[in-house]
Length: 183
Image (cartoon, rainbow, N blue to C red; front, side):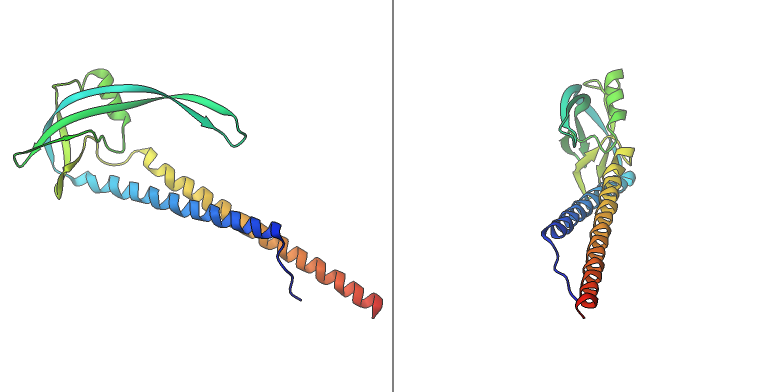
């Protein structure tokens, strides 16, 4: 005996599918960040000079799942620097994947305008440069979130399939009972 899916069970599966797509997208984004951070660890260096540096204080508002809005302060390092590779001068504002090191350097005066700095540049594209190479813990956050959404969506699919199986068994038992009563 075949049962038809109810609109509720279909919407649960659709929601799970959307969650799975979010999980896959978040994981891909996180993996690309990890690959990018890992790729710059072997880049050559050159000397650069700080053009400007500041730490901007930003107030960010977030809304949680209950609709409650909260504000938090985020300190964002901003830096511009100039460097030369093969007699070609470049300017960049890219820090890398670990910004806290530069933020503390700006606060301490290590990245004061006019100061010399070490710049890591992409040998295949010298306009691509960073001040900090490698990973920081924040690089792994999208992967962890992707895993969370992935497991959540799998759990939702399992729950929906169990509901369908129980509904099918209940319907079958009801029909068997009717067959016995009228048989």
